[in-house]
Image 1 (cartoon, rainbow, N blue to C red):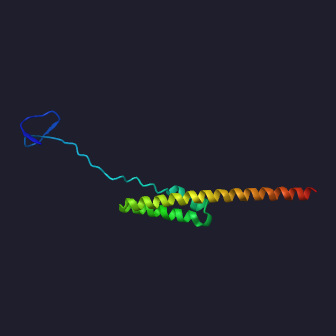
Image 2: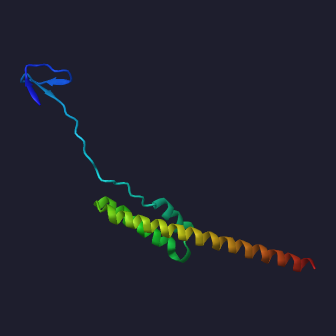
Image 3: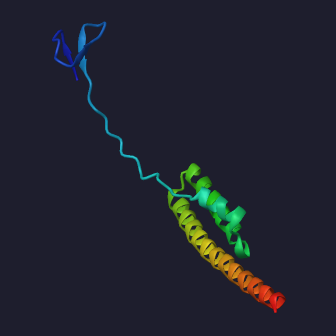
Length: 118
């Protein structure tokens, strides 16, 4: 809004002696928060990769990040949700497998030590 030669409070006097007042502009952006779980996927890829689930999770995390950068947010959310589900499955299966290996090794060691002591 411009007015002639009236210095208004909050207005800016320009070189042509017209006072311009600033109006706030509100821009609504779509929700761009996409959780790709790339760190969780990298951990599962390197340390907990039963049946190549860690690789599948890492692949979906990369696809989620690529889709987000391309602006395809629904597809990025889909890939991110799939990566999270695969990560959870990989960590559960990997933890159970490690626990079973520890139990089997401890039982074997106890049987070996009892065999050699008798």
